[in-house]
Image (cartoon, rainbow, N blue to C red; front, side, top):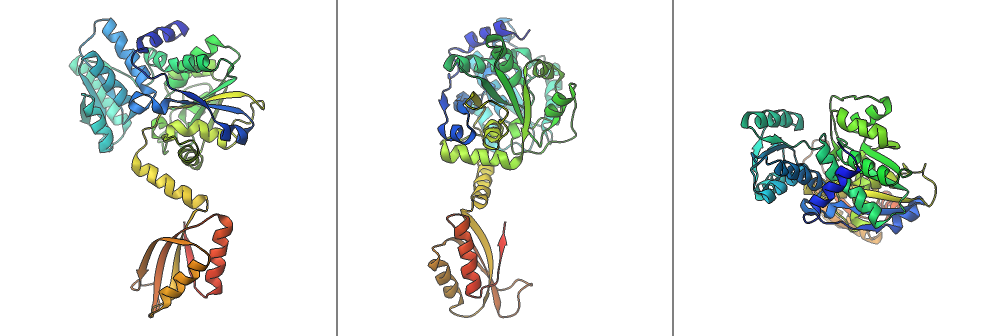
Length: 404
């Protein structure tokens, strides 16, 4: 049964294995929100995510019961590495079933920890179905990523640490996908401090748990689509939903743009690399989803993981620069003759717009004969600077359009 005693036992098992990650005051966020924000940096955990806590605790209980036949898990990322780490620690076989589309870096990360990787299915659900069957067929124990009370107990140790680090906390904000993290944390926090407010945040593109919370019963969805892949859970677990309904006070969602803004904010202003799932609590704070809390409340936000795909990070940075008026992309039409390009670059020089990329096209079918398109990417210094660039181009007679 998941209770404070089970979570404290999990903490004892984890004591020599995990990092007791720091929890730091976030002055910029605090000023933005009128709250006192503290961030729990589980992105700095071993394997880069909180998932190690639950996976290790579950496998430790199997070892205590003398079940050493090996473990199987289905995961495309953080849970996989947690299970692989624990299997290696205890010297048992680990098998991780991952969707065929899993990035190579995540596959290699699991293999480097000593577990076998089986690529199967086009998505997590297909990998999960195969993994459970594989475990039964080979007499191995399946380690569920969230709907398991020993896994939840391991995740709940984060709340123990947070309340030890700052007993005065008034609220804790937790990312929610399958619900294992918030189930464990809420159980621990409410047992130690019943008056504390527990807030769950999920992605709009993975709405099953939010819909289930609002309805008070499990509701599954047909698909998910979010950059927060760590919480992109399609179906609701009745096991975790029960704990969430009993212990979670507020449940909200954040959209994709808000998640991307939070990732970029953490990278630029907090010097922290955090994945989409780990950033949703910060997104909620930045975009006024926590305004129901009294001013000055001490709020702990869990950064649940930092294993972001570098391709996704590059895309988020690029879009973030565009949205914050620090970069603009233009397609400018020139007369295709000597000196025309120099005239354009001179105009851009006068407004101190730095060209970071340029392309010249004289063959597109939408061009008049004798014209050319110049595609430029510019570094700019804000909204007013971009207006100055547009005005200068018009004054110099350059037709242009913007790309977004």
